[in-house]
Length: 35
Image (cartoon, rainbow, N blue to C red; front, side):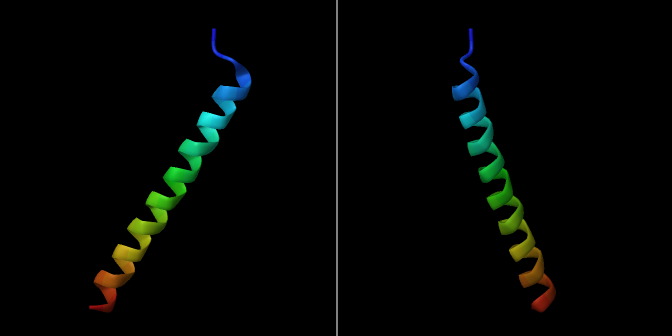
């Protein structure tokens, strides 16, 4: 059985990583448009 606390913490980490990935993708797109 999964402990809700660990599950929530993992989800938060995944969300954070996803947001960072999206930010990086946006930066790359902006750089492509700038060049």
